[in-house]
Amino acid sequence: MKNDGIFVRAIDGFKERVGSYKRRFTEFSQLEGGEKARRISEILLDRAMLIILVIAIIVIAVMRPKFVSAASIINIISLTAAKLPIALGIGGAIVLTGTDISAGRIVGLTACIAASMLQMTTYVNKMFPNMATMPVWVVLLAAIVVGALIGAVNGFFVAKFKLHPFIVTLSTQLIVYGLVLLYLQIGSNAGQTLSGLDPSYLDFVSGPLFYIAGIAVPRYVLYAIILTVLIWFIWNKTVFGRNMFAVGSNEEAASVSGVNVFKTILLVFALAGATYGITGFIEGARIGSAASYTGLNYESDAIAACVIGGVSFVGGTGKVSGIVGGVLLLQIIFVGLTFLSVDQNMLYIIKGLIILFACALDMRKYLKRR
Image (cartoon, rainbow, N blue to C red; front, top):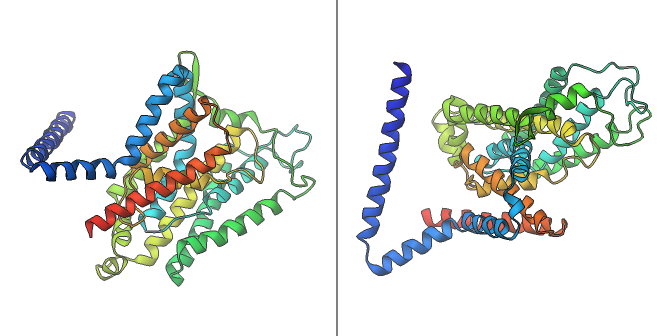
């Protein structure tokens, strides 16, 4: 009976959505010629980034048919899963009208911590030669805690002293990078790349979840799905999630309504830091090593994905589904450009243009609403 009720609600929701589309179409058909053209141009401009990306994907697929092969698709899904946790974290900061440019360095720090604790005991250049390889789940928890603590520091300074998140996270970006460099100097490591990772760690993260056409789908895809569901639940089904959107929409109004603004901002950044810790833990095993440059510029990809996915810098607007779609589209484009043999250095220019264009469109929609 319970399943029947869920099925009925799903059907009702589908009917309601279809009815909404019919009403919009009827309203549109009743407009005058000039008004119709204006409405069409607005719709196209509002969705210009998505349209451009879709066209680019189609062009790449036509020019390089292997782009849509099973191996390529699994690679895109894997890359999306690897970059999704950090984007989900930054998405929360953007909902609060902020951002977090320390994210990539936190990923690097937690990746180095995870790699140093999970090197093989027989590895010649083991960072801590007298320490046994720790249980994987303990190291995962440590990475999450370290990330959450740094995120909480960001949130504290943003909430307590009303500093702009850009300034705060710029500061912590430099601090965390310094910590990474100092950490890699411990013992006889002398700043070297941490490698020789234990098979238990590699298998836990990158081991095959299942196979498609003989190609393995890594386990971290499942972890990304679980985290996405958890973040969706937090954003949409908890008081904390409602408070986050309320503070992002209007901090003063939220405070008057009884929302603990300080606590909400602190927790949003702490949650973001925890997702960076998960990203770092995954990256160490996915790449097979960790170094001072691990996580470099990861925040730029995450910010671009969030904006493409409809998370507005104006605040109070964003969906987890949009972030997932943004990360997926971005990875499709980057993989496609690789198939076209585009210079890797050009990707930085393309990322910058995507962020700039997407933010300009976002601001245009905001000004139009005003």
